[in-house]
Length: 208
Image (cartoon, rainbow, N blue to C red; front, side, top):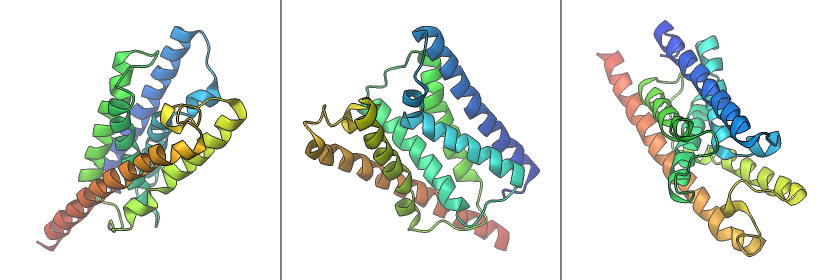
């Protein structure tokens, strides 16, 4: 459970590791590019997903428990990492950024797998429900809305599938954004099923 000293230590290590990866990515990007627009950097979904998950892990490690929405936030974080990894490998071709291939693998493969492992092994204080994937849509909806508003103001978009200019206007965004939301629902459903199976197995062990 979340209050276990071993679990708290592991979650703290995962959270600190995620922030260290972001620091390495930022340092590598600065070294390769000679400068950085912090708004553009923080506007990348992968960066936000890793940061969100890392902070969630550190807070969970410090408290040894989660709140009423804790299970949904955990699922949201893992789903975000999963979708970011899938979209990076497919729509973006898996290309490494300025920080290099090692950091690219840490961001899009290693950290998401470790977060998924934590989700699969550590039970929340509340059970996963079928509504969990729907609640997880709050993350991409807020991200996409913020990206479109900021993009209209500064004329910069992190990905082509959220760029109205690359999609032939805002009407053309409907199809690409629908695909993204379907990806979130699909990955979110898989994450929820993993959580439900975990809860069932843990519950049986407690009964025995």
